[in-house]
Image (cartoon, helix red, strand yellow):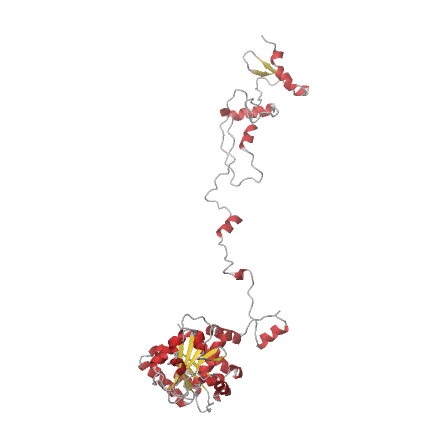
Length: 451
C-alpha cells in the first residue's frame, strides 16, 4: 500500500504557508472516498480542475456551513423566482460569472448543479402601464417645419400705431409701450389688403352714367390713382368718352397735357398692328405717377367714331400688359362703343348724384342693364353717389341711398370736396381724408368683384 503521506503530497503543497488551525487533512481510503477527520463524512467541495474559467485563479475553499447549504440546495427542486419588472439600478452580473461562484466536486456532472436564476427581465404584465420615456415622446411628436413657420423663432410683433392716442404713447415711450393699431387704422389696413390682392389675369371695370357732370370722370381718376398707390402692378385708364373726354386733363392738369405729346386713342388704333411690346404701347400713353392713361379723341368730328370692334381690339392689347383697367364710358349707354365695353367689362361703377334727377337716372341705368342681357353686371354693380354740388338740406340723402342700395352690390358715397367739384386736376394729396377713404372703398369693392 502506498504511503498516505506520499499520496497527499499535493495537499501538503497546497497547505504550505497557511496557519495550522485552518489546515485540513484529507485522508484517502481504499475505496477512493474522501473523509474529514473533524467534520465526519461531509464531502469537501473543491473547484473542478476541468473548468476553463478557473484556470490560473487561486483555489477557493468553502467553510462547512456553505458546503452544507450547497449540498442541501442540490437535493431540492429549483423554484422559479419571478423576475422583477424593472431592471435593478446596479450593473447586472454576467451569467457565466454567477455560475463560476458555485464550485463542483470532481467527477460530478454540471447537470447536478442548481440552475442559475435568469437575469433577463420578465415581460411587463398587460394590465400594468409603463410610463413613456422622453425618447418615446420625442419620437411620437411630429417635427415642426421651421422653414414654413419662421414665427417659431421670433415673437410676433404688433404693428406700429399711427396717429391717435396710441400713436402718441408709442412715440413718447420710443416704442416701449405698443398698444397696437386702433380700430380706424385696422380698417385702413384691411382696405389696403383688399386693394392690393394679387390677381390672376386681366380685368376691366367700366364707369358709366346716364347724366353728365355728376362725378364720373373724377371718380375714374381718383380710383385709378388709389389703385396705383396700393397695387404692385400699374393700372390703366382708357378714355372712351365719345364727347371729347377730359380724363387725361383731370389726371395731369390742362397745362401739362398740352405740353406733352398729344397722342390719343385714334393714334393708337391707327398703329395698333405694329405694337407688340409694352415699350411700343407706352408711346401712346400718358402717365400720372403709376397710373397709365390713354387719352380720348378731342376732335369733335372723329370723337364719336370709336366702334365696339375697335374698342375690343384696344382692350385685347391692354389685357396683355395690365391686370386692372378702368374705362371712362362717357354719358349714356347707347353710343357706338358701348356694346363692346359692356361685353368685355367684369364689373361696373354707376356714377350718381344726390340730386333727385341723378338718383333716378342711376336707377334707370341699372334697370336698362338688367333688361338688355346684363343682369350680372347690374346685380354686381357698385353705385357711387358724389356730393359734387353740395345739395341743400332739403334733399334727404338717406332716402336716396336707401332707394339705390337694394338694386346693386354696394353703395358708396363721396362727400363734397373742392378738389373734385372744381373740375380741374384731381390729386390725392389735396383731397379730404373722407374723400380719399371713399375712393379706397370704391377701389376695394372693384377688386373684390374680380372673381
